[in-house]
Image (cartoon, rainbow, N blue to C red):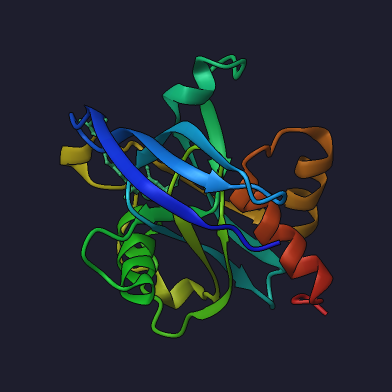
Length: 193
Ligand SMILES: Nc1nc2c(ncn2[C@@H]2O[C@H](COP(=O)(O)OP(=O)(O)O[C@H]3O[C@H](CO)[C@@H](O)[C@H](O)[C@@H]3O)[C@@H](O)[C@H]2O)c(=O)[nH]1
Ligand SMILES: [Mg+2]
């Protein structure tokens, strides 16, 4: 099905940190009729995320941080286990994820591999997320990580057995979309053999 769109208008609802617009547009349906639609759209830019893995140790590096949206929606202590991730800002996805990896986990990785990209919440959020994997070793640890002080990130760095991380998806201890996608990617593509 291909669609035709016209008369697109944006009304700014909020631009405090990122931007929320009410977007109105005419969309032609399958029967050729034009319909006016309105949707609220949140734009925080695009992002990148990475699964760091160590074949010898059979381990992955994940992070844990407080996420207020999850606290407001059923996550009792608000802490969420996630793959390292960040917003692109002005970077390209690869430079972004290398920078974020060092800031958040303390590992300096030179070789990263993009595996796929995905819209994570396409009904409401513009964000396209770029997914990477990279091997890490203890020698690549150049700092403590934890995120940027002035951004109040307070990120804990976790090194987990891959098997344990997968079990934590099954048990519900890991319930972040991008993290589940990357762990499943590792499983499907036999990253650990
Ligand atoms: N003051 C203020 N600061 C904010 C606000 N929103 C974000 N920030 C700051 O901006 C930082 C963004 O950190 P990043 O590491 O670049 O992004 P992220 O929050 O980890 O986002 C990543 O994960 C998200 C959740 O999975 C993804 O949605 C996103 O694409 C990205 O990959 C936050 O830590 C916080 O300090 C806000 O409304 N107000
Ligand atoms: Mg982050």
